[in-house]
Length: 299
Image (cartoon, rainbow, N blue to C red; front, side):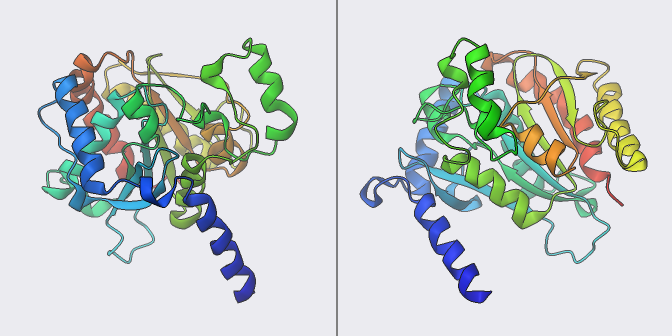
């Protein structure tokens, strides 16, 4: 068993290093690029500090894929574990604004309910797309269509063709072929989140996949509580973000985490990708998001 485990991690490491070693950027260099982009967006309240981040691996263009965890020093299984993912699509930067603000609040102690939650934050899941301002990663793959769902082999290309082979929705040649997809799979495996929250744009709604979704018929109590969390977010945002029943896709996070693994997965769709509205969206989103993260869905 130990031999197989060692072999698995060795193979995983090969996939992580998709870029040539000489092309890998340091956290310092990457954060300089990110902060330059923040200035272009006229975002003044957040900063990418390289000292704050752990690195999972590197994108095909050598950019580090960052994450950080908070609260795991507390040995209390009753505390909910939240996985928050932003900029899965690189051209939806307003999600990163929210993720960086969450980290800022955690570090500077501005969250009153800090001890009531554990959080894993990945602020820029798709660093190449973020810097290139593209939905896909640098290899032209939609990361939210590439996760290894059970229906990927049979349906991913069929669904893509139904969208007239839109290059922005290309699922890749193989499920989980992309380092950014492997990153999400590993975070879910490693931290076993109570809920997953992904921040996207530009449709302006909240959607649940898995328990709480109207398409989900198992574990009634879990489903009811998961849905109440979403309804609470809707109410706290004063209906700015309304709960809808949106479909999931082969290779999507909602399908992989919510539908298949029964982890309540909340997709928050901000109303626009216009980066000048990022702070306005955050002022509305902060309280509903904080409340949601303090609630343990799966008791």
